[in-house]
Image (cartoon, rainbow, N blue to C red):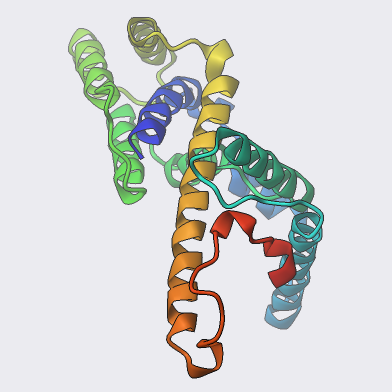
Length: 240
């Protein structure tokens, strides 16, 4: 996951530069959730959740039944096709991509944080919980930038301090430039991350299939079956 970790670090740094704004400009996800519908009783809420999950599941299965997925993580064409299929599933079933999920998590967990330092430390916690590493050293650079700004201000930096935030964002722009990160390339980073994750998912799927076949061979009723089957020849549509 080294590549995805690097891409996450790059994306996170840009996200941080964009999200770490004055609090009055931030509109968190939960704001929309609170305003979107009246309060529901427990049973009705559970029913709505079940119906939504069922709908998403049926949509996803419907797409997967139409697509031939080759379980070959070493074949770039197979990985690319799988990534495109999963992108279609996310879009049609309204699932979040990995990058969107990261951004949503950041918004949810930082919306009530008043100061910049706690915000950056929370970003680190989010990364650690996801098992990702900061290969680019972006976190250290961001903390150093914050130290510099707070030393100049002679006080802790609050997120609603427009002057202080402008200074910090200017420092973040310098870091982005140093690391070769451009805002306009953010979609490319996301695409590369999703491709890497698609390969990892195919590798996990291949491992599960091989383990299942090995278990099956030990059962008496399958003793006359062929010794081995190339997983690349399997069609997962037959198992949905």
